[in-house]
Image 1 (cartoon, helix red, strand yellow):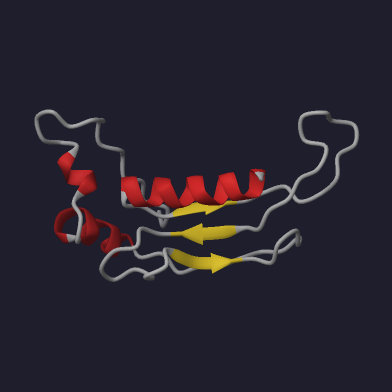
Image 2 (cartoon, helix red, strand yellow):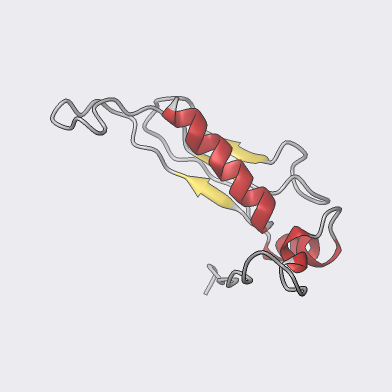
Length: 111
């Protein structure tokens, strides 16, 4: 159940913020912890399902419950294009009067 909640939440954040999202679950047993005694999941990189991105919103998905790396090529220009000229302009609509949230800061991870 928790793994699905994380995957769905990541997809929702990618969609509503028109950005990339990576999830990195812990996949192990931790009997000493009542809160996280069993951890399940798969690492993934998701994107907004918009023009130029993967239609499914999935760029990379690891194997469930496996200790492994996943890799994906991220293109910041696609993010900018989706935000200014995508099918749905969720991100830029926030800047309009009556918008629901402040704009998020775009961070350059290549620097």
